[in-house]
Length: 278
Length: 278
DNA sequence: TATAATAATGACTAGACGGTCATTTGTCAA
DNA sequence: TTGACAAATGACCGTCTAGTCATTATTATA
Image 1: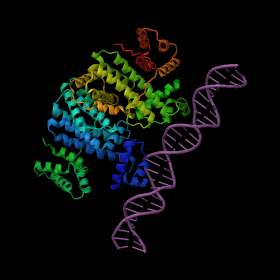
Image 2: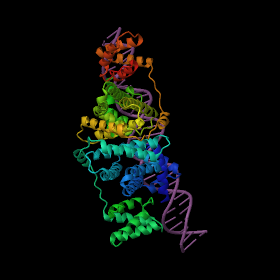
Image 3: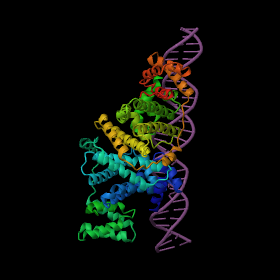
């Protein structure tokens, strides 16, 4: 297991610097100080590695933002959203660099689909945020793309220029811009109709109760004795046999939410239990 | 010469579909119906080809926008700017696709520098536009990045979704957004100081009078007898030995500006003669 | 038609790549 | 100390790549 972790970390460094295609397995193994065979014992292929990286980080990214959004009041919602997004990017800057380099470039089918899937999750999050703050504006789809374009451009700045970067101020500035646009811009370009066109290519991937249970099982096995493990076990019980008060569930979810390996499970469970603080 | 043209067009198609690295010289030559040797007679390497492509199209892109901006009144300036940009993208969609795919990805040093150079030209154009419309706002640098992020995101939409695309409406919508932001957003993130940090990595590439003359010489050789060629000859005379009234120069510039091979020269000369319609 | 000059060919080189597998090394309990 | 099992190795394979160059085909000139 430690080997998989090592390969992930070292490979990510190289991918961020050189890109995925431009980094050879040879290079990765040398940088890890292991043999080529050892690499293929940990991962079936180079592709499997990048898929694992994508899952590992995007799950954290989405669930971080989701948690922040669900636990902010309307006052600070936009700020929290941007702040959480940029914070996660800064913490995992190598991964962010990799994603930016690979985003339009990829011809690996499975990778492309996975990226699109996480893209949609983020889009849904943003749409929910917009509707909550501004209601059912005619320009709401344009607002999604505006917010995403802000994120893209300033993420690029954050990653590729060695600038002293004040995330607080950036989030503030972008919140203001977003609000200004929501309140004053009137001409929609992406109409309901255009949005429908775009939705045609959607990937519908509903995570079923059984799948959630399976993922929980998996995580329970991985974790050693801890509050997180205990909480997961209780939540599993609860899913099979509902009995606790919602406050207890909320507490249990809170217990697991900040553990890197549990963030995704916590996100899935928040959706499953329909849990929101506000 | 026709061979170079053929290779450019066919290779661009493949690059747009598959990316630069993923397209082999073999593939290009087969698609052109020529031999590998013939390819290397036209271009010294695969890299030289992509550099030529970049120059060919970016020169048109920049000079198109520059001409539009310099010849619009303030009323329609933003609209014209966006419209001109998206129109050029749509006309050369294969090239635009290639650029988007390669933009963060490239590790070819010379290519990277060239891309940065054209990036800066665009940035200067946008800054001039902002200052002309809104004066010396504190948020002017943020406005640059906002405009560029609008362009990026909607260009992506235009290129990679098969949506019926109304460029008029898009340009209208984006003009409004830009104006709204310029008038109502107050919090700058990219301050003068940050902008200075970023300028440190600037490439200063001043095109000298001699270089302009050389490029003109080159173009004159390439062109067959035509109004464009005659105009270029007269403009060359004028550079060495100024004698004409500025109206005549303006007319000569107008003669050459729409010929694909002269757009860049026209752009350079507009700057040289300090020519603006307004 | 003969000759010179130019254009075009494609078999070939050298090297890099992802991935495999027979072999070696390390680690236990007995 | 032995034997059994698992972990790790790296030489090797087939395939692909950018780029070269001796050879051939085409064209222009005399």
